[in-house]
Amino acid sequence: MMDSIAQLLEKIEGTIIKDKATLESFRRDFISKKGHIARLFEAFKQFSIAEKKAIGPALNSLKNQAQKKFKNAASVLESDAVPSTAQPVVDVTLPAFGPIIGSLHPLTIVQNRIISIFQRMGFNLVEGPEIVGDWHNFSALNFPENHPARDMQDTFFLQRNPDQLLRTHTTSVQISTCVAQSPPIRSIAVGRVFRNEAISARSHCFFHQVDGMYIHTDVTFSDLKGTIYHFVESMFGQATKLRFRASYFPFTEPSAEVDMNCRLCQGKGCTVCKHSGWVEILGAGMIDPNVLTNCHIDPEQYSGFAFGMGIERIAMLRYQIDDLRLFSENHLAFLRQFTAC
Ligand code: DAH
Image (cartoon, rainbow, N blue to C red):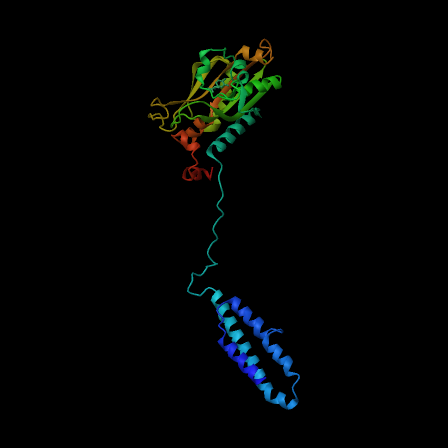
C-alpha cells in the first residue's frame, strides 16, 4: 500500500496542468470518486486498525497534495481568462452612441411631398404597370402609327414580345385610369419610366415621373394654371416665378411647357438651366378629345387637363443637385445628407 501511495504521489507531482483540458483529466484521474486516490481509500478499509494507523497519514497527505495542486492550477487558469487591468477600460459613464438609422432616398422624400400636395387638392393616387402595351403608352394617347412623335421618346421594346415595352412616361396610367373609372376623375400616378438614352449628368435610361389629370364637366385651362401655381408655390415657396410656353404633345391640345426660375444659380446661368435662368419643370395641357374618346369618355360632355413632370428635376431644383446620376449611384456620402429631411 505504501508503495502504491508513493508511486501515485510521484505521478501527481509529475503531471503538468497547462490548460482546462488537462485540469479536467487530472481531476478525473486522481481526485474524482472513481479516481486513483478514491480507489486507495477503498482498499484502505480492509486493513487492520494498527495498519490503518501507519498508512492513514500518508494516504491523507497524498489526497491533500492532489487537491492542493488541483486548486492552485484552477485558480491560475481562471485568472488568465480574466482580462488584465492593463487592457483598455470601458468607461460606463460616457454617453451612449446613438443608433445609426437610415434615411429616405431624396427622390422618395420629394415624391412623398408631391403626392401630399396633390392629395390635399383632392387628387387620388393611382398605379399602373411598368411594362405596358403600345396602346397604353402611345396609340390611345393619340400618337399615330409610324408618326415621328413616337421618336420623342426613345423606347425599350421587350424582345420576347415587341408589342410590349417599358413605359416611357407615366401618362400611360391616364389610359388605364380613364378606362377603369368614369368622370369626375382627379388622379395622379407616380413611378419609374424608361428611355433608351445615354447616361449623363442631364439624362438617364430610367427616371421617375408624376402624371396628373382632372376630368369633369367644364374644366378649363385656368383650372390647370391654378393647380400648377398652387403646386409650385407649395413645393418651392411663394416667390417662385413661372412661365407657360406653348408646346406640343399628341395627347393634349392646346399644350404647354412650364418653366421655373433656376434655383441653382438664382438666374445667373448654370449648366442645369443651360445658362438661360429658366428650367423646364413640366408639360401640361387640355386632354385631347381623341384621348377621351379612346377611353369611352364623351368629349362633348367632359373636358380635362393633364400634366406630367420628372421627379428628379424637382429634386434637383429643391436640393440644388446638378448631376442626375447621383440619384442612382448609391453613394452613402450623398444619401446621408438627407437624414434630417
Ligand atoms: N408625358 C410627357 C413626357 O414624358 C409629359 C406630359 C406632358 C404629361 C403633358 C402630361 C401632359 O400628362 O399633359 O414628356
